[in-house]
Length: 227
Image 1 (tube, one colour):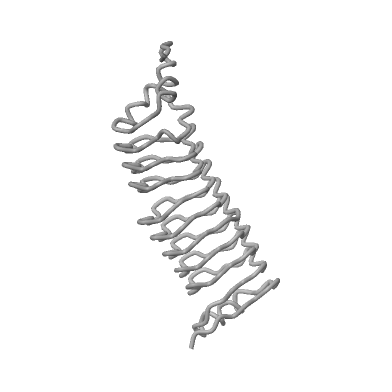
Image 2 (cartoon, helix red, strand yellow):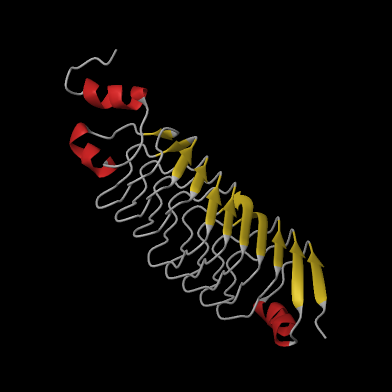
């Protein structure tokens, strides 16, 4: 029978959490300090982490399906090869965390700081991103096709070969983003800050919708004024 254990204001060791996992139970961790722990390869399916300290914590290869992280401080955490299918990351700081080769299928990233995060080779089918700071993040070949992106900041992000076809940008930023080989056909970019985009890069946005103001900024590089 599955039981849910609750730990509050504790600093458990790996052995403590492994014991819960091996018993087939789930856990709710509230304001616990797991900073620097190696929790690699543990089955933490459905676990809840609220207000926890996770800086430098390693979840490599762990099972975190349907897990929830709420307002956690996880700068520099490692989720390499982690299964985060249908997981929710809501609030908190994941700056410089690594999600390389992680499975984020149908997961939700909401109101998080993810500056400098690395999503290389991550599986992201059906995942959603809203209110996320992805400044200088590495997101090569990620598909955002038909997604509605609200308040997502991609400033200086590495977005090479990303698929933004038919995506809608609302209060977003692509300022100085690295965009080679991206696809924007049918995308609505009127709600995106395109600062730093040069006229020579405008071909990337072939088939996309931009505003008159954005068009004027691009043409202004040629000394033309749009009235």
